[in-house]
Length: 99
Image (tube, rainbow, N blue to C red; front, side, top):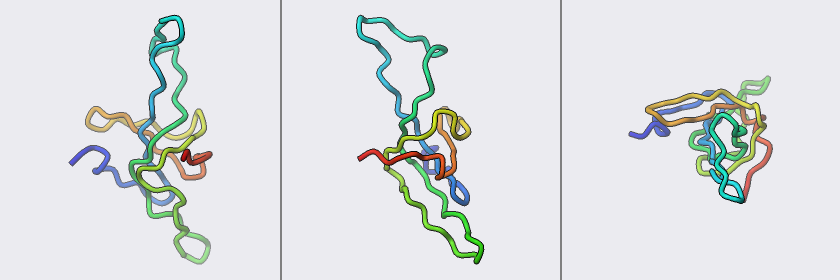
């Protein structure tokens, strides 16, 4: 079982795998990890069941596993599971779906 299959987010939380941008700039210069900005595009790997409204009804999630999304630069919590990096954030931190 992969790390992504073992993660089950709660409520309206979503687990993303950040999609890395190109490692090399024009002109052949490499950017060290410490100088890189956090990626803002990711792939949804797991989705919670949705949060409850005031009446106790579950609000369905708008994203699903496999979706590519854009998220806020400082959103979520980074976690490492079995050597893989993931980001856990609330669905409201997702800005858009990329088709």
